[in-house]
Length: 137
Image 1 (tube, one colour):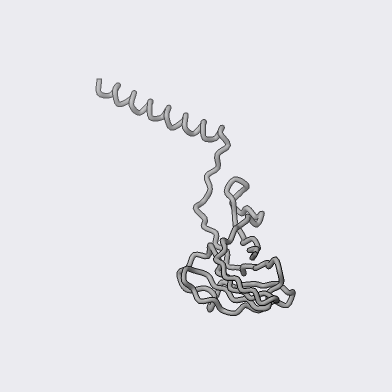
Image 2: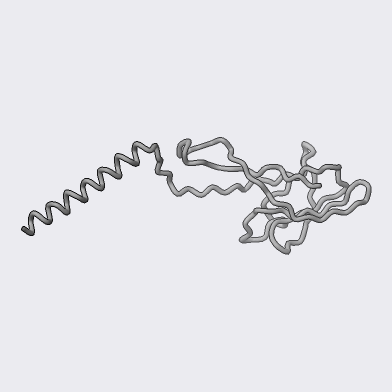
């Protein structure tokens, strides 16, 4: 009697495992690796009106540092000192700028992301991302 009961339990477990396997294959689900992607590129600031000067930084209570234009005329804030304090998750940028008219703006603005289009682990697993340009009013 014990052998029969053990056999039925083992048989039932086998049926459950096979059913789960068949269902998961049939559903098209993909097992993706636990890959975390970080983006370490610059944050581009796009202004509605051309500023006379720009300072920026990342993190709560940070101290803005002057930003200079790149060779191609863009305002890029690198994720490095003096803009980035250690152990800060870059999700927003604080911008302090003076417009050509002398108007002063100081805003903390969210940074949005978008996929790069690369999917090294397959189309269902996502992949690396980059920051979208931050539009400063």
